[in-house]
Length: 260
Image 1 (cartoon, helix red, strand yellow):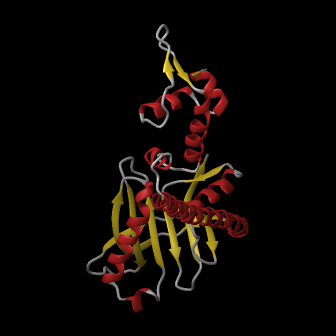
Image 2: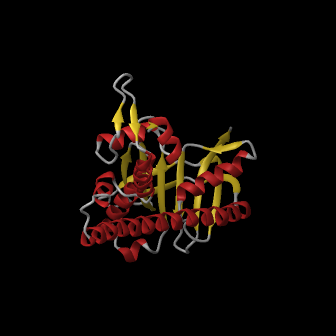
Image 3: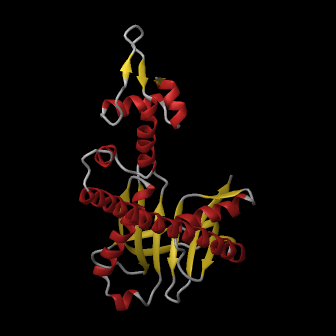
C-alpha cells in the first residue's frame, strides 16, 4: 500500500490535488489506517492518478474527466467529449493568435514611432488656437478611446463632412484635473458654430511637436515613446495634449514640456 505522499511523488501530483480528486470521486482510497487515519492507495491506482493528471494537462474539466474514465463510457460519448475539447482549443488558438498579432503590431508601431520621433521631434512654442469643439469627460485613461469616438460623432453630425475634411481636426486631452480627463475634438475657427462649444487653447512657450506621416497605431504608445525621448533631455510632457490631424494628411502630437 502507498501513502498519499508516496503516490503524489510517484505520479507528479500533489497531496492537495489527490484529496480534491478523491472528494469528487475521481480517485478512490484503497484503505484508511484505523489507527492514524492516514490514506492508503493501492499500487494499481497509480495508472488512474496519472490518467487524471494527463487529462487535466490537456485542459479537460474534472467533470469531463469523470466521464472519460467512466467504465461505461461509450464510443459516442468519447467522441463527443473529444470534439468539444477540440472546439475549445481551436477557439483558444484563434484568440491567442489575435492577441499575438496585436502585440506584434504594437511592437512594430514602437519601432516605426521611435524612428519618426527621433527625426521629427521639435522643441518649440505651441501656438494658441480657438476651436469649435465637442467635448466630454472620462474618469480613467482606459475610457479615452470610447470618448474620442463619441466626440467625433457629435462633431461630424454638426459639421458636414465636406466642410470638416478641408480643415485640420484637433483632438484635445486635458488631464490636469485630479477628478477627470477632458476629451474634445474640434476644428479651428474664429466664428462660433451652433451646436458646438468654443474651446480656446492657450499658447505655450515651451512645447514639443512630433510629426507623423500618418496617425500612430496607438496614440498612447506614441506618447510613451515621446516621453522616453524627452527624458533623455531632462524633460517630460504635461498639461493639455494636442493631436492635430492636418487636412494635408500628417498628424502632429503636441504638448507643453516641463523639467523632470
